[in-house]
Length: 310
Image (cartoon, rainbow, N blue to C red; front, top):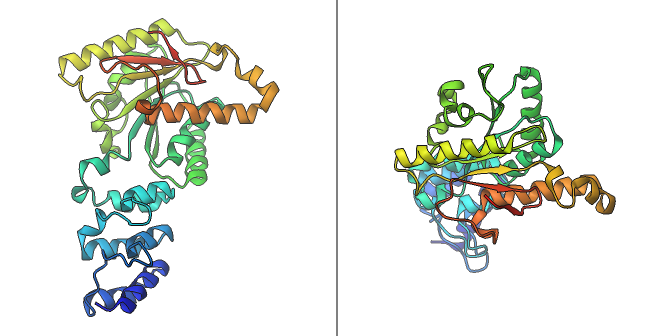
C-alpha cells in the first residue's frame, strides 16, 4: 500500500471528497483502518472531526471495522471521538449502525427521562447540559402547555447544542393526579405517542429517570412514587438493570441557596454550576463519590450535588 495514497485518502475524508475516496478504496485497495505513525489517526476520525457525514458513511459501508478502530492519538473509538468533539450529527450517523456496535459502545449514549415543568431556567439549563454531552433526552411535561412553547424550547436547545435527540412529551394527567404522580413515571408509554419514540420501550430497563422538584412539590409524595418504582422492579425482576429514580430538591433547599451564591459569583454562574453538577450526577453517578446504594429505589439530591438521606 502506498503511504502517499493513504495520506490522500485522509485528506479526501477531511473535506468530504467522496469521489476521490471511492477511487482509493475501490481501485487502490487502500486500508482505511490503517494508521500512519506520523498521523496516528485514520480517515474516519478526520471525517468525524470535520463533520463529513457522507464520508463517514462511505468508510463504514466499505469496512465495518471502521466502527471499532481505536485512534492511536486519542485512544478513542469513532463514537467516543464524536461525543468528545460534540459532533452530534456524527454521533447519530454512527448510532444508525447500532447493530454493528458492541453494547459497551452503545451505552455511551444514554437515554434520560426527565420529569419537570420546563418553566424555570435552571431546568432548561440541566436539559441543555445533558444534550451537550450527546445523550438522548425525553422531557415529560406533566401540566398542560402550548405546542408553540414546546416547539420553541426544542428549537432553542437543539439549535444551541446541535443535538437532535431531544423530545418533549406532554402528559395527560387526570384531575386527581398530582404533577409528579406514579402514572406520569411508570405509565409514560400509554400517555404519549410512543410510536414516534420507539426508544422509550427501553425506559424501564435502560433509561435513567430524574425528577426536578420545585418548591410546590410534596417530597413525601415523590418518595411514594419511588417506592412504587421499586415494587415494579421487583415484580419484573429488573432490579439489576433498572436505574434508581433520581429526585432533585428545589434550589431553596440548599444550605447556601442559589440566591446567596449569586451574591458571590453571580446568578448565571451559580445556575450553570448547579446544572453542570446535576447533569454529571445523572449521567455518571458512579464517579460522584457519593455513598450510593446499589439496590436503592431512589436517591434524593440537592442542586449542589449533595445527597439527602433517603
